[in-house]
Length: 274
Image 1 (tube, helix red, strand yellow):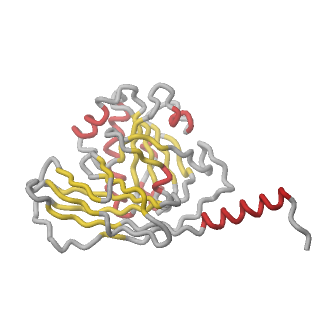
Image 2: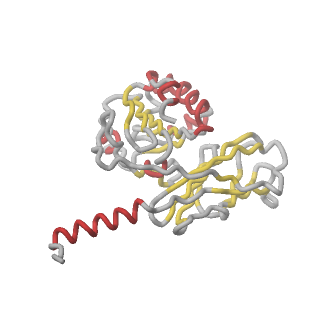
Image 3: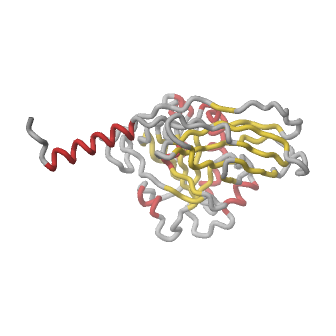
């Protein structure tokens, strides 16, 4: 039998490793909610130790508390600002880079049952079209990014593969952006329970007032990010955004399905992607 040449052997290795990567089974995010001892009615313990990974290990746990703040770790204690309802989201990532997220709405105006069952859902089997080029146009794969929240936690676009993502470039100093925010919240509220992820990315160099604006107006369920380089604005450039507000609708496979003004994003556009 003829032995493969060096190039052919390298190709075989690439194919073999690609097959292994594609065979990775995503983790399953799951968490329990418990009352915090001595923390008051608005303080809870969130425990993600029930999260599992069938063929590896969970290496990262990220919490979105639903009140505008974030956290990390297998377990975390968090104090909410008021005894109201909050949607807590847990995102887990395994040692092969796959991720899964799950959400649960908790009502702090009522006692938390000690027998709270772990929350979980089946991870989505995502096939990323690697033959589709990365770019900023409709039909191209959305450029990857890893950006900080206002509290310094890191969020990757790749974490939300398997979910429809609505990415909004904005600034609190932009009157058109302010006018579009209620529509963004309407879309989030309409489809959040079906997996829609809304990410806001401020392009303002002075971010001190951006998060406060979202808090003051009750827009606390967005995943609020900022540019790591507020001067160069590399994410804005990667998506070819020249003016704001600007929305990008990304399908579960990471492909851009709409890019333009947020007001043109309607329910039926999201509905057909879910």
